[in-house]
Length: 266
Image 1 (tube, rainbow, N blue to C red):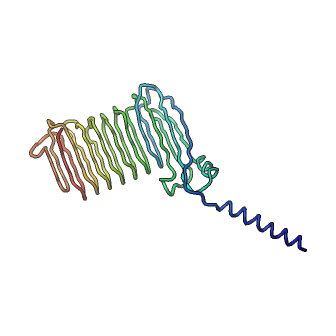
Image 2: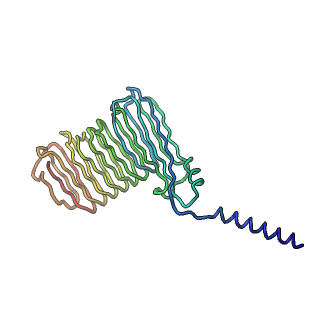
Image 3: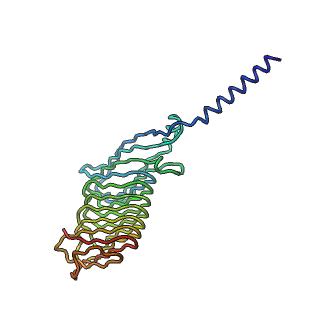
């Protein structure tokens, strides 16, 4: 009888111990997964569509006929290393081509509740033959490091964006995040539309064209060459306008519901 009782106690101890190990809470830490590769691109491919659910994107340009990608997947949590490594398997990078467009999708198979704990840092190096860039990003950041000779379209949610330099048409729509363009030339009907965030642009604008820079909550700071013939149509608190009194063939609309507008020459 004592042996039976002792066996029951030991069995209960083993069960409780195993349950305890399953429910062990580890200090929050990160686990990483790496994926590098390349996508062959013919000269007929002129458009690249990029779709990222959560991540930080860097874009560079080169003269090779392929797209090179270098990705670092990140998972953070209070689980064991083994459990976190299993979660890394939910990441994928998929690519495809249709007609004159290449598609790249970086995604996580499960629902992301905390983007700061599940994201990808990805670096793309593009052929200079790509002339149209379309980007979708849910949460994170975007940096176009090299000068892009072509058109850029963006539809992003909570994303901070910086384009160092570009020559082309810009169509940028953002929910929450700052936007910055460092230099270059914008072609007709370029627009930047942000729900909440600051807009900063220093670029030449095509003659006989219209441009829109609009934010719901944030500052709008625009800089154009001093010799530009610009007519500014501002909506909001105008802090400075170096092009006051000029009636030109470049129509610029700058608007903010909550913030300040500054129009400068360089």
